[in-house]
Image 1 (tube, rainbow, N blue to C red):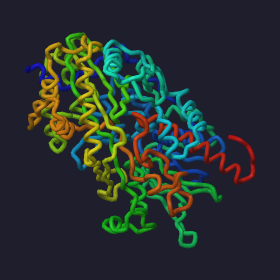
Image 2: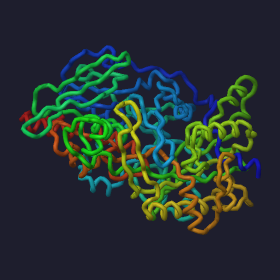
Image 3: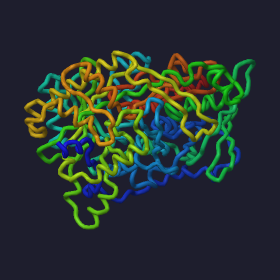
Image 4: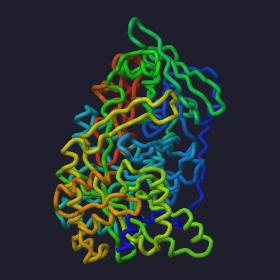
Length: 586
């Protein structure tokens, strides 16, 4: 049992030499450091945030207009870790000021990450690629044909069909055996049953990100400035109505730059800074709840109580399954989409250190990483949320460094909750736009989320006990013991009681909740923006990113966020050309 306690986390990606490769940089002629930006410049569109939505949006609008894209981070092509699957956990574990991943801790106590790199979350996530369901598309009033076209535009560059290894194939067969049907094979579509989804990692383990979509840009139509830290949006007045006019941003040397909109009724500033950055920048620019802005001495542009409200994060809970057989390295590839609102997925790892020797093994022992569930990345599921302190993480890393390699053979089967229905809020912490705001997600505050989690954990139990999965689970390893192993990490101050009692499963859900980086909200449709993503009460300003979502689309939002950037870019172009009487299709 001592070994099994250690198997709470697994060695995920260290020293996977078969995936390592030289990362060839991409030299976009239009991409430069912000220190090279002019002190003042004019554009038709200014996009704040070169992330998952901002890159496809900027590329699309640049086809006909002059576009400025401002990104607070650097280039993914300059960091070999970003583009190599073998270093997935390393990026999340890097807490330095120059890291592509900026760690934040929600008020719930769950450690999370936000991107700080061109390409956004697609540069630091686990790579799963799947579309939103038809009902989601209908609810937002999107044109289904244009949505499909936009998805395909994205998929041509960044999406791939993964090849399943034995562990993932067994998970797939296990889901089908227990009735998560039908078998939908490989598809990007969101359909009830079991499917193999897409990945932004290709067969060689190279990551393809939203930054790759900038290859669609018209070089003469776009400027991309890196390490451009936007301080605020500048407004004027049209009668009593605020009008967005420009953006103040700073470079790494402290220099100030102003970008203004060209004259023209349809020129716009578009916020694509993400679920944390977009509401934060609106508040710093004077758009938000009056009382909250007054606390920080921010001049009010518009009282907008909805800014920062409706924050949600899909809770994830996972069960570790130690394996009597070797398992492949895998990220999320298979998903079981249940009828009760829980998604079942898995990720596996293996004792890679045992395959190396000498200096390589010694180096690995110093930096042992355990993938998605690594203490270095801050997940540390088995420490209750409020106890996930830096000291607890350090103790976990030290404890895991003593674990025998063979004990790390296995995988996690996880469930995450549809929606979710639980919501929280975002607020300013200070006036520094590069600092994290405060955010709470209130995990499992809605009873339906908790019910779905418990049902998902019970489904995982059935998968583990299925004949199809028997090769990768010890025959006498009972599920209550599995619950206990998952909850008994050495740094944990609590001992869980597992079993079939729904109340015990609900308590397990609360105590081992993690993020799977699907947070959204803060600038929701109907609350802060209209259905065309224009900020209510303000002219020439939109928000186009995941902050506008009321629920996470499909089983993973990144494909839909990229699609949205393309979709809205095309829509804005078409509407503008009709209004200007050009009659030319983009």
